[in-house]
Amino acid sequence: MSGQPMLEIRTDEAAAGKGIVNLLPCRVQHTGPTGPSSAYWNPSVDENGIRTAYLRGRRLQGKTASLPEGYRGVVLQRKDDAPEPAEQPDVVMVGGDGDEESAPSLGTMHVVTAFDKMVVWSHDAVADALSDPYLRSVEEWFKVADSIHSYEKEEKGDAK
Image 1 (cartoon, one colour):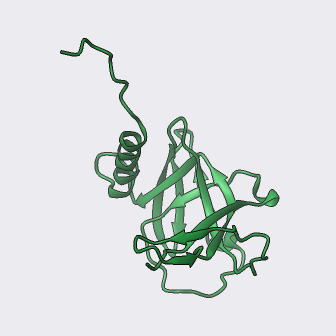
Image 2: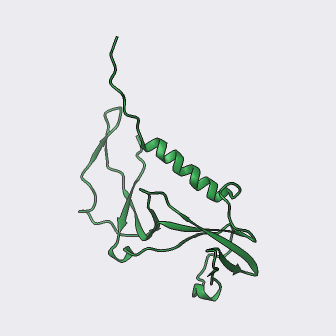
Image 3: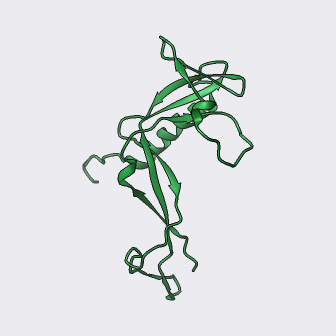
């Protein structure tokens, strides 16, 4: 039996603040450092609450979407921590065939920031929940998560 590695999520004290998450429909073919983001990303907000920004000459308009009550979002970053022996749980896995294995190794993700709102950007128009695939998929995911994590109370009736 080969076990899948477990994932640990750690909240560092430095990540206590709230950030702004931007969902931007583009692909940037660059993997190196970029320098200060203010040089190329400076969104503005008009009196109707619509955000406007320009990225590489393309006009983008953004709509702020709040997470539903009871949900919170986090931005995670993998850090290569050297696990200390005290951090590893003392667990022995027993497979279906009775063979003992050591516990799977823990992967660690650190919380960079938390958020309760995100800005969904689209090209030349404000994102609409009915037509924007990204915003629609987020809303559909919340419905699926609610149905998975909720339960119906059974009414006690007369048993016959």
